[in-house]
Image (cartoon, rainbow, N blue to C red; front, side, top):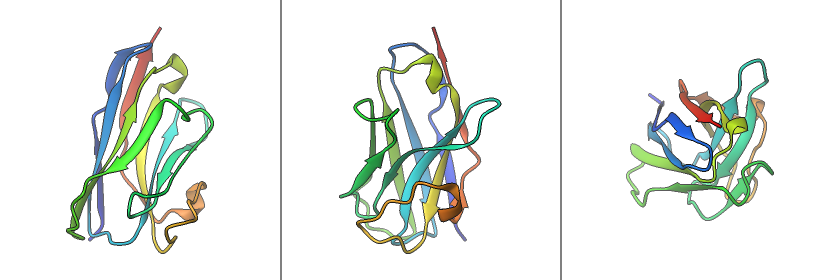
Length: 129
């Protein structure tokens, strides 16, 4: 059974940092991603990572500030991915969702919701000005 469980959200002042975690189980060879959804807006792609962790892709809003990584565990049953967020801005306020896409390979990083098979329940990030 596939599970994605996010944690690490919270309230932070502008310019601060947060690290989001996504604990996964039941996945192997999936492309991982973070999406976010602000109030009244559509869910949007933030960052994606190939299963090996060797290839990452970021939305323009995240480039230079966010880093997507994964643990070194090679236990296909359980793994954790991380989104390190720095220099946070009020416009980063949103619910952040972890996502997994099957069979995307190591080169192509999917960026649309339709391409992802699983989503977690989300973790709230609030950035105050």
